[in-house]
Image (cartoon, rainbow, N blue to C red):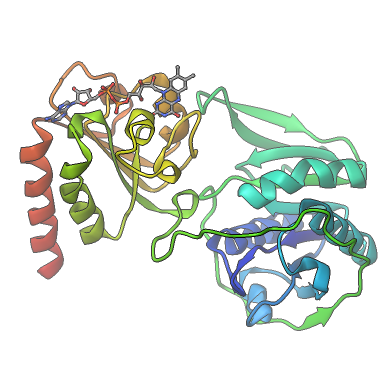
Amino acid sequence: MVLVFAETVKGGFKKAAFEAVTYGAKTAAVLGTDCVALVLGEAADAGQLGTYGASKVYQVKNANLAQFDGQAYTAAIAGAADKVGANVVILSHSSTGKSLTGRLAARMKAGSVAAVNSVPTNDGSFKVKKPVFSGKALATYEVTADNKVLSLMGNSIQPEATGAAVSVEELAVDVPAPRVRVKEVKRVEGIVPLPEAELVVSAGRGMKGPENWGIVEELAGVIGATTACSRPVADSDWRPHHEHVGQTGVAIRPNLYIAIGISGAIQHLAGVNSSKVIVVINKDPEAPFFKAADYGVVGDLFDVVPRLTASLKKFKEA
Ligand SMILES: Cc1cc2nc3c(=O)[nH]c(=O)nc-3n(C[C@H](O)[C@H](O)[C@H](O)COP(=O)(O)OP(=O)(O)OC[C@H]3O[C@@H](n4cnc5c(N)ncnc54)[C@H](O)[C@@H]3O)c2cc1C
């Protein structure tokens, strides 16, 4: 059986949860088995995971799961997998999923692949693909262990809500008390977090200074995009660090990445070159980013960006 851990935030499901359940259902179909979903803690309307392909939803309610704790969550997921007889566990490759995949694999004595982006094969072996070398190559991994733990790269599958809501069953699982207490959580409100964003408008040192970011935010606002930046921009405190994308920042794969005044250094590309469509605006026709671009505009960003925003506004109004 395939068990999918569906992540929640403030009692609602993350988009990554719907992606993971859709992926789990496809994996279960390939393996000729069922896909069930697991919810830890409170979640409104957990049965809706059935619409994405879960045949049943299990929910573990336990005071020790009130805040995220790696050990407690690992114990809960491993305990649930054991109880329902699941040998394939799927997580999202989010910050939560990243901190659970290795622990869970160790606890379940499982073969594990993090950041997969393809449904397993069904040719007598269990093979999955994942991007490697900063997205420059695709590696195929064969998992030979009976138990398997996978984390799914964000935005690598479209959630498919084609089924119907299913029943939710409460599951009693031993959960140890967290050994770490979270004192404070500072959450950025009102925007789609970068790892989940489908549209991203990003800018670099070509912006000259933080006082010029209005044109970036306006463009992002018109298309409903999340804003990002290059590392020197965050290092200079022009923008908050959570916007920094690249090798040492957040790795993203949106449907659209608009790069404004960013040169396209290899370390930047490492975190964004899996984007489906890349648009580059740069005044230097030799900027390396153009080699990775699907569309490029050679021009002064202070001229191009406001004109692009105005055209998009007009387009939307029409
Ligand atoms: C170990 C390591 C890890 C790193 N990790 C990261 C990372 O995770 N993310 C990251 O981003 N960087 C990272 N870097 C830094 C990276 O190497 C580059 O230095 C950085 O990405 C450059 O940022 P930038 O493109 O904003 O600035 P610049 O390289 O200065 O480029 C600015 C660009 O703006 C263009 N420009 C200037 N004025 C205008 C204008 N008016 N109109 C249009 N275009 C204009 C220029 O032509 C230029 O191409 C890392 C470096 C190291 C060594």
